[in-house]
Length: 350
Image (tube, rainbow, N blue to C red; front, side, top):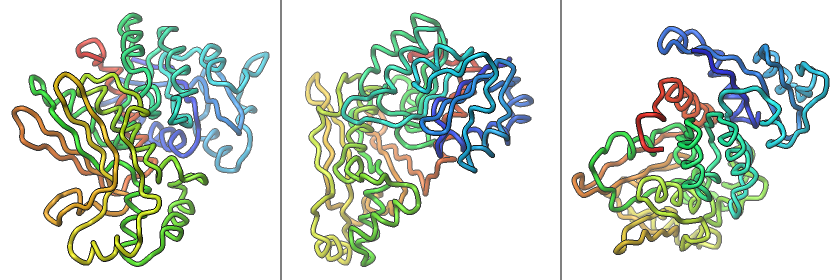
């Protein structure tokens, strides 16, 4: 089977995905009978290229590393505009990888990107949380209507199977509550403050490493965590929530001295996400909590993350991801592509 691929977004994650596609080309072919051709790449600031015969990924990566435009890789009479919806319509892809930036208060433009691709009968793999947090039911129905896959494993715990674990490994079980430490930036900041760094110093370290944005409010004010717990609640608990529905507080303004004194006592501040059932409703919350030393979430430090599920048959199931990177996120997208090729969207609820 050959899939024609489009990469919408070619930042750290998109380039890591391109690297994995190159590295695992033989594994995909021999292990899964899957070959691919990248027929389009669109970036926000480094050009657009469409080539139905296939784009040279190594050359695209080299151009991106040098900061040069991808326009020179385009084949055709006219260059498609850089906006995502127009690119999707112009690119002859079977599967669209969506890895653009997220507006945590509206879920755009990624939701429109996914909607357009699904309406055109194209599979979608996204690392963007917005479409799942803001339009999960609508987009899942579209995917079913058009007989294509809508996959999004990389939206919560990078490439770790936080969603797959709940959907695939627990058939017949009812998830009653979810708890997690899901934001790398805030967890790193709290860990570094415990070690003696200031809030500003820890944040600067994350920004220098390219793991936090220049505007840190998305992370430190709890928006990223709110979007992620919304995704988990919508997909695994049958909720129909939006990030604005989450009772949300971040870590901005927490007293640094108190964080250090608490750590010396063996307890630890963590930004904890929660979703639980109250009657027929699902309630969600994000807030700093002081966790006792025996709590596994208290021991997850730095950029690592953790999620725990309580079900009616399993008291607690915990998944920990250590020190993720863009490659981790890209792997989740690669795994989703393999599941599309295996036809998993035909045999499970999307």
